Every structure is written in structure tokens, then in C-alpha cells.
Length: 154
Image (cartoon, rainbow, N blue to C red; front, side, top):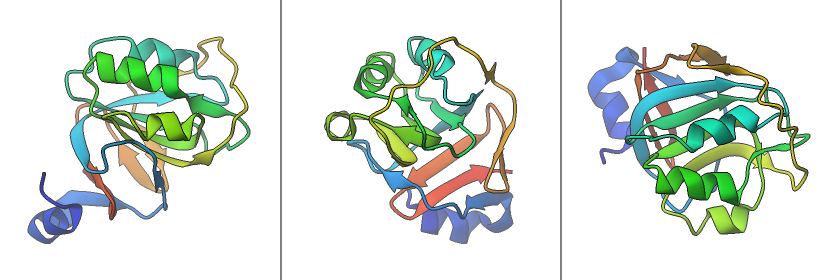
């Protein structure tokens, strides 16, 4: 995969750069793919449901509103993502089971960790544009992530 710095040098303002500083948790540090989105608040039911469907190399961008009060992904959801062919997840919120997620062949970026479980009602919105840190993630746009950050097609 081409480094995000090199992609930005090549494509410039055709790519939006997420200035929000996310941490790397997955066993894969560089990943890319078409965007799928979930918007939810302290409820990972929809995240779990989506990760149990064929990912076909997509990256799930989860707008959790930046809440660190509960985790939106744990090792079981991450393992389902691997089994179903997802490239990764970018989570504007927290995860749990970070050590186990770090051993999986999946890209995972998030704000931080919290061992507290989230609600599981499935409340949220799937595959609508979400804005995180001033950057819009549209379903179907290509996102690129590595140790330097996150870029997405405008």
C-alpha cells in the first residue's frame, strides 16, 4: 500500500486529511478500502450487525460522537470483521479488548479504550455521510489509513 504521505503528495486537495489524532490498535497498521459508515452513540448493535456481513475489503467508519464512555468494538466484533473480509475500522470513539484486537489481521483506529460495554439496541444510522473532525466520509469513497493518519477522497 502507498503511504498516506505519498498519496497526499500525489493527489493533494483531492484528499481530505483527518487532523484528529487516532490511535492504532489493529494488527494491520496500513489499510484502505471503500467507506461504509455507521453513526451511533454508545450503542454498538449496528456496528456488530454490519461487521457480520461481507466486507469485501471495505473500511467501516464509525461516528460514535467521540464518546469514550463505552466501547463500540471489542475482540468478538473485530474477529467477525476479519472472518467477513473487512479491511478495517476507523472509530470516533472507544474500543475494548485492545490486546486481542492487536493480534488480528485488521486495521483498527480509534480514540482510545474503555472496558465498559455499550448498549446493544442497534440504534443508529447506516451508510449515510458522517463528519468527523471536519472531514466528511461518504459511503463508497476510498479511505486510506496508516501510521501517519487518515485520508479520504473528497
